[in-house]
Length: 497
Image (tube, rainbow, N blue to C red; front, top):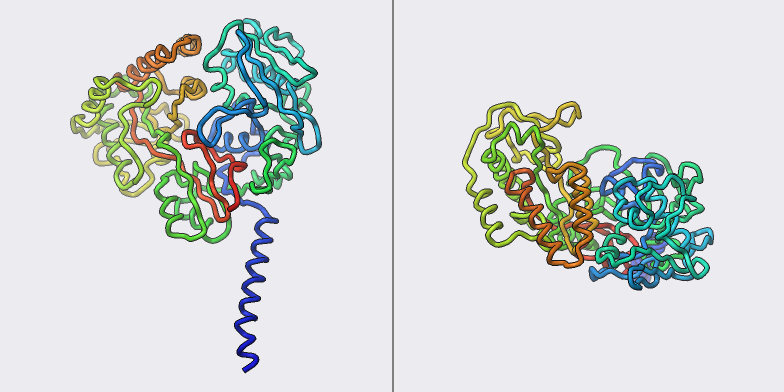
């Protein structure tokens, strides 16, 4: 009898010990993040991120002067305060911010990071370089830039424009303007040589090879909290896997977190979190746009009616069976939104497109990336379609996706102008961008952007396919405190219950 009475107590004790051990192991261990990259550290260049995984890495290990809060407002970043003093943008740096090895981060680092971006980033950074430094390109960090000044013993950075730039603070939230500590740079090549002493909430504690890194939280950072993940292991994907396989890695305990650009359908992640106790999912506003771009070749070979037909069929396929996806009729829905008459016109042209069977040989890029289900079949109406993924064939059209969470965000506009999106020469893009950022009146900027996107859509150059939120998945005890209008996986925003 005595042994029977003891048995439940022993079981309870064992259960408590197991929970305690798991709890201790978890909090003393690592957050394992499934990461779709095998790139070496040297590939992560802050002035030229190309893919979502680049932004993920850079946004966790570097910080900008200003950033977005979880409430979608611009707030202090490395700059404790920021303001306009006439035509000067004045940034007072936070005191006490240090790298993991104790190096102080101050206005000198911010100044050199900007000059470095002007040198390495080329014309993408001319919107700031020209008014700050003049028309002559910078060749080295020692070259003068009269509009940049460091004052108060390294505590204050001044950007002297001579007039207010209404979009400046929006622009500086982009991680491409993040601060790289000056000691982390190669003095000759200006490449980042030290990913340990970084300006962000995390630093690279170890490089395990093959794209596997361990990130550790920096207690000297202003975003540090004992309740954020203190160690993060990036688990690189070495092959293409299905959504089901990615989710299985989470349920099988191989990873603890899936970033927003893996398992792209947010409904799949929400269903997983609802069905599996101990998991939570984040959800943004619908800011991810899947779109279709016709190249110059495609525009020459396909009539306007045929291009709208292809877009209509692609929309029907993509939206079928994908919950949380909307059917958009424009690219930018906030600043630059189409008028009611323009929206009605585009809607009628997309939904009323005639039926065709286009038998001639066409090529497309990234079709399988977005239409990978067995029911996503283009063959019935595009029997001659081939894949241009070999890089040797100029496609007639391609699919892609990007953020459209426009909040007068000049960074997003710059992103689309740098890509094969709008049918403009590089000179025309530069001219548009300069005109847009120079306008003081927000309504004038909105009208300018409206005209740009209307021309692109109405001419059948860029056509919207689907709009949806972003979502990420995390194993308990992590809870999300992410902005709803910005895509990203800022792991320092996660909090334990």
